[in-house]
Length: 115
Image (cartoon, rainbow, N blue to C red; front, side):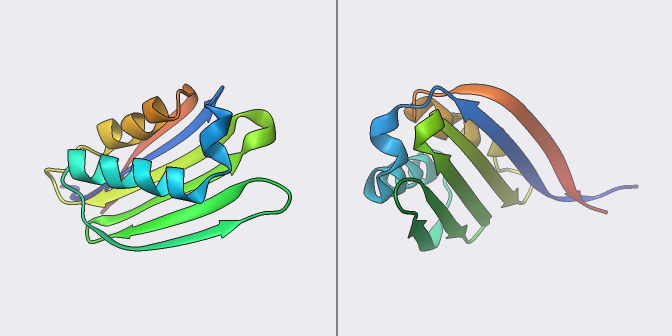
């Protein structure tokens, strides 16, 4: 019998609102709102701002992580939400972030992690 140790959702989204995609504080705020909404617990943020535009960010959660990479010049993001435990609504948390960025999902992968 297989045991899922975690749920992993990977999303690519286009047509995201450009005002957010180059703003670390705005992205952090959206991740904080998402964490509150879906009972996730942020331990630490790690972000890097690229020049001239774009960013990569990582929220380390007690449940695992949220990672985001933005391409403002294309209105595009890659989003990665991974949570451990049976009661996490990983897919809805990922879609919440995309919705807050006014994006349209173009690819979505759902994985059960474990053995």
